[in-house]
Image (cartoon, rainbow over all chains, first blue to last red; front, side, top):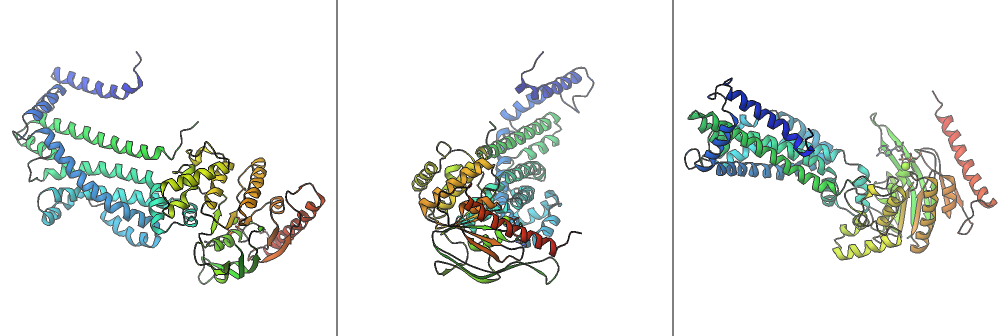
Amino acid sequence: MKIPQRFERFACIALLLGLWELLCAAGAVSPVLIPPPHRIVQAMLELLLNGLPAGHLLHRHCLESLLRVAVGFAAALAAGLPLGLVLGRSERLRNLCTPVIELLRPIPPLAWIPLAILWFGIGLQSAAFIIFLGCFFPIVLNTVSGVVTVDGILIDAARVCGADDRRIFTRVLLPAAWPSVCTGMRIGLGIGWMTLVAAEFTGVKSGYGLGYMIMTARDIQRPDYVLAGMALIGVVGFFLDVLLQRLQQRIVATRTPRSH
Amino acid sequence: MSLEIASLCKSFPKDDPAGTVEVLSDISLTIEAGSFVSIIGPSGCGKSTLLRLIAGLATPTSGSIDLDGVRISGVSEKTGFVFQSYALFPWLNVADNIAFPLAMKNASKQQRRARALDYVERFGLRGFEGSFPAELSGGMQQRVAIARSLIDNAEVLLMDEPFGALDSQTRSRMQQFLLEVWQQTRCTVLLITHNIDEAVFLGQRVVCLTQRPARVGDDILIESPYPRDVTSDEFNVYRRRVLKFLDREHAAGLRDKPPC
Ligand SMILES: Nc1ncnc2c1ncn2[C@@H]1O[C@H](COP(=O)(O)OP(=O)(O)OP(=O)(O)O)[C@@H](O)[C@H]1O
Ligand SMILES: [Mg+2]
């Protein structure tokens, strides 16, 4: 049997789900530990219609989480992109700042949670701050490496065309480094999304958030709700990456010609 | 525009402390407005360095360069520069590459478009205004680069081995094309080349630079009128003279630095 190519990548997922369902049906695994896939779908529906805690509906949890990520990511982009451009351009500044960045970078964003709560209290700001920390370093480092590899002759060419320093940044360095910047954004957003859920485990004020919902499900011992939350996190994370990939391709498509 | 170069020297710092590499040593040249000057010299003697100084991309260690009696300090909008590697912006299409200097002067979009299309037409690039540099042949890319250097009414055209990367047929077509452009615009052209035939075929004058540190070793007036006949006896006399000079410099170079 020949599977059309576009369905090929779903084949493996379908196979795993089928196997999982079968194992559960055969009684090989306890449904209390690992509920079967159809139970998770059912749980998803219950979360969507009834909510957890009661009245706190699934899509609101999801939107609230996305908002936190959007704020943290936007802040990281607003700070990281200009910083990356400047550091990429100046070897002196790069030498000065790299040790600081390399010292801060390995600290897990979650280790900042106590300070974040101390500084910003529990709420959007502290969660966004944690996300910011997750997104910031990949964006800075990839922008730097994108700028460092820009051919110096393009900068000279822009200068003889009358470009001032600001124009060199916006008209040469930024477009030349764009593919690398996008890679940084994708890695940053991925880390940010992972960080968010963990950050919400520590508590949210609004009573919404996917991580918070999973924690609530654990407290009432509903592994099907936990797994439904996990599945949604995976799917949303996947689509966020697809979105950025599209953005990257759309802008990059104009500069790398179709081969003829 | 006339060009007055007086006692120009340029040294670069070397790796070992206090050491410097002297690249240009006391270069003086007077170049009349509207003339075509070829510059030839042994590899690595400092030809590009000389051109970058005239373009204002680098500053002299001592000496001066005057454009129409005005001391240059930084990039002048009256000079255009053409690089051997074309140095086109890969993310801009042909029209936007050509119009880049106008964009740097905040010209309106319609103005940029109209001027760029005019050059597209005159430079034989019709139908390619929306193409990206990677989609063009080497000769076409170099046409775009020349158009970009002239669009802002440059009066001095600096060319650093502009045809070095082209095959010989394209190269001779581009030489012809350059002569036409020069005769139409009457700009002052300084052209660096490795190629004796090219230097003699194009220039009203061939300036021969010595081994590093470069001085003006010979300054030959080529008095044959355009269009020139490369098979004439006269042409061979000039070629022989330049060839002799370069052979002598090459031998001198070997004497100074005996092979180990
Ligand atoms: N920015 C720089 N710093 C240090 N040394 C430099 C710099 N630019 C050029 N040089 C040195 O100056 C010398 C002349 O370089 P230049 O590129 O001007 O020579 P060229 O005549 O154009 O050579 P080619 O024939 O290879 O094009 C070389 O030895 C080079 O190493
Ligand atoms: Mg050179």
